[in-house]
Image 1 (cartoon, one colour):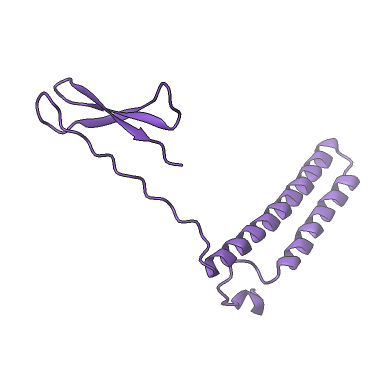
Image 2: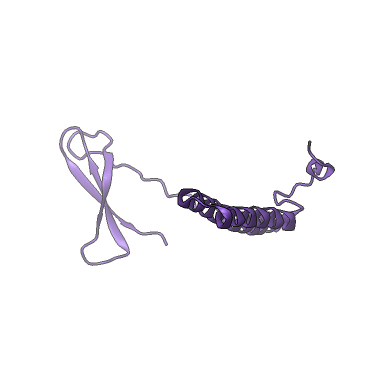
Length: 137
């Protein structure tokens, strides 16, 4: 049955009982380690050692997740989230032979300048064209 703390409606994704999770995981690690020590069968001992390692790994992941969520929530409050850059649209040229709009097929690096590249276009009639473009940083 859920306790009253689980009914907390705060907007935070981080559990208000972050430290309690650490205690829970450490209890599980200790329990599995004790079972491994008491196991007389080698296979069971390995099983319980693996379980203890898994609980320890889970504790570390929860700790990292709570740090990331808290950082994200702080950034959200201060509107510091990175904004994605919109890519510049590729404007396809018209074919010099037939006048149809050419299709973009890929890019090739410029042979001399690392900040430039060629956009390659083809036409159903077989014609090829390129546009020189600058890389965005």
